[in-house]
Length: 489
Image (cartoon, rainbow, N blue to C red; front, side, top):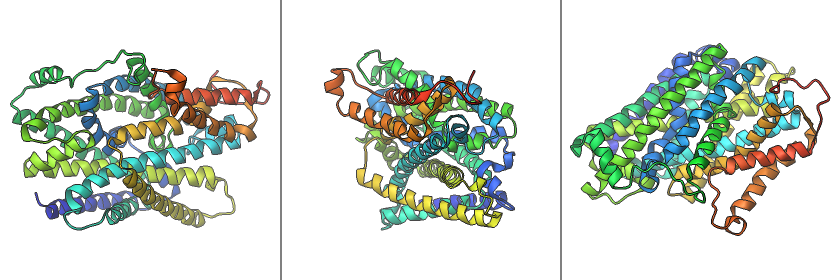
């Protein structure tokens, strides 16, 4: 299929998103933007969150990583199941009991204003880095497959895509994103299934026969028992649980959609449904990765990692499947950024600027401030995408999980200390403790051989980071004195 035809498909898809945005953002206000007026349908939220959770990184990097890690990602998936159960049964009841718009307000109630601002600041950092890394990956593929041949520079592609996202999230926010994410998840899953079926047909293989060939090629290995390896099964399971606990349960973007559901029971059903759907979809992505590595040598494709799926799809699939792949890819692109920009705008307005506490601002003034913040985050996303273009890593999923270990660790430590202890902290010192955890982890990470010998720290860095922050909070705390509510008794 010609680049011009593919480009027209992208424009048509964007037009559809604008139509959904227009239909859902009429009469929208700040409550619509921040929490969808507490009227979102839990089934739509659950299905749409699959696309947000997976994003373009999963679509491209998980199949690509099979050549290196086999089905080892399933170790992390086992941890994901435990993490979603913890979010549904521990964190969601807390958020609904406090009737939160920003989940970081819990830290204000439990630990103090500086703890609250520290948690919000680390979310802003975490989500900005993670979302822009995901966005960069998909923009880069669009650039290579369509726009380079049309003479469009990478920076202009990034500007146009972010302008598109800005247009359909500017007014409706969460109220719009619940619907657009549902559309985008559908597009992504259609592409996944279609490509899988085509590859099985082309190689004349059944599912069981293809799995046998993957096993004989070393592509289907799952469990790694070497205790020194960063991919050790127990490290991966524990890391997977804590990744979900932090990157979903303590993440304003993910929880903003959950708490837009009217009741706690529906929000919990949403989380458990997401758990089941996600496990099935990730398993299918791994299976597709195995098929790609079986098929690529047959058609002379030497690519690996993040490049193998685009190389096979755009070079060796029929035109109709190239079209499906492109729709799936842009369906993976938009959830990488639209919900993130909306959540970052919400968190900055509520947690940093204190917009909902400002009695001196009428609704019109608050709306103008929110619009300016939204524009500023779009500009920041553009800057960060250009930075990732300069770095250009071979596997973005590894980069994102590594960044999460550093930036979500303080959130884990802050929430865990508040939930598991009855002590009060010296709020003035909390930001320094929150910064010390990642710095100590970085020091250990860059000196692993000297400190640990053959042992290699992997994704458990997130847990270590959280424990360091908890230990620091204990050192600056004192026994329970005031009426400190909402910790787990």
